[in-house]
Structures are given as structure tokens and as C-alpha cells.
Image (cartoon, rainbow, N blue to C red):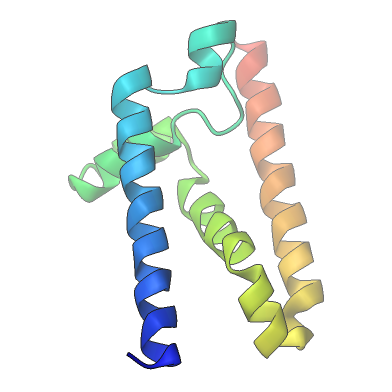
Length: 118
């Protein structure tokens, strides 16, 4: 088996493993582990429910759970793959940082607003 083929298989196996980990994590801990142990919602609480609703076709419900679930997922995937992306496309470093700061800021503003209503 060639080196390129091994890299592709490794890439997909890692992603499948992470996906299975998150599914088991969600089922075993019945949602957010931070909320389970502290009783306080984390800034990303609702993202899993939002994706489940979105994939079920309940778009309004999805955005009610967490309005930034799509940008958060995109930023998460970009950060996970940033070593590969920055190696191939070093010019995207500043836009990637800016995107992360904007999405993080929006998420924290939503979280702090949400916490005031609890």
C-alpha cells in the first residue's frame, strides 16, 4: 500500500473515530458533561441538539437551540485541520484567526446574555 493511500485511510479512520467518540460521549453522559457535573451550561450547549434538529428538518428549532451552531462547527473543523491547511495555504492564517475571534466573540456574547436570563 502506498504512502498516500495510508494517509487517506488514516485521515478517514481518525474522523470516524472522533465521530463515534462524540456519539458515545453524548449517549453515555446524556448531553453536556460540563452541565452534568457543574450544573452550569457551557457556551456551546445546544450545538448537538441544534444539529440533530437541523438534520431532521426543523430549522427554526435548530437556530433556537444555538444560533451559531454552523459557524462553530466550521471553526472547529478548520482548527482541527489547521496544521494541514496552514502548511498548504499559509496566506489563510490571518483570516482564520479573525474568523475564530469573531465566532468566539459572538458565542460568548450569546452565552453571557443567555446566562443573565437563567
